[in-house]
Length: 385
Image 1 (cartoon, rainbow, N blue to C red):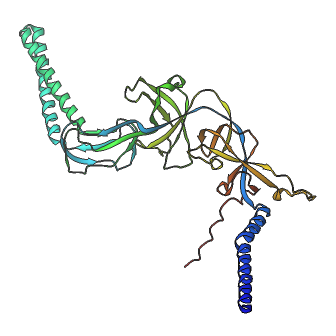
Image 2: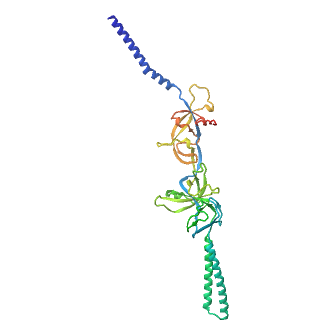
Image 3: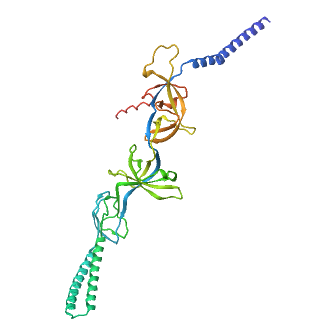
């Protein structure tokens, strides 16, 4: 019995010790760790920030447009023939009246010589009839017939000259030629395109505007155009004309803008992002686009305010060590121009807004502002192989 009692006592003692260790490991220790973490100071994130600014913006009506040449045609012959000579190259700039293509006109030249000989003979016959009619030796009908034959011969000469002129194709206006589609010695039919000719300076841009904005449009209003081949560059022009009707299908009115294109950077058919500066100027609060967090639940920004120093701390923070607390603020976003966006509601001019590093923040976060701290490190240069 005594051994059984001792064994039971030892077993109970070991079980109590194991239970106490388990309680400490799974109950007391996690609670202690949680308390230590809660009591630890919040880490300070390094971010970049900007001041919201007050700017004067004109209302801007956005649209999507397409460029078209001021004048653009296909160079094509009026009559068929074999190409005798070409006087241009693809992409060449030409002035009005430049000879571009010559078609073979040997037959027409022969006809011209024959018609000129006939005309000369008709002139002589007419002159004899005039002398005879003066002396009363011929009838008036003979003079009329000679006059008609002379006029017919002159018309045949003019027709031959017109046919010869049609076989010499010239540029009707100054512009840039497109790709050449034919070669010397090739037979071409009437209306067959030989090359395109486009007048590029100035250049037109056609774009639609909703009919609700028709009252805000006027000839001469300024437009700004951006194109994909030249990112960051803005081309400026003005409204040249407004269509006389509104499309019944889209309820849009077609507007044509005119833009200077001295360097021929803009070409017909290019895609254009157009903005019409219409209406009166407005004072708006603006931020860089990177400062706004866009989402389906609403757009927001993180506004930073100086944090109070810890209690009992007598050391003043240097400007670089200033600690801020952030709050998430829902804002109403307006127009976007270049890399800045207008804030219509929710922000005042001069407030400090986080522009880089928002992904690691939440309301109440403590941050340190450094213009370079919120940006990713520059990539290290690769060693030359």
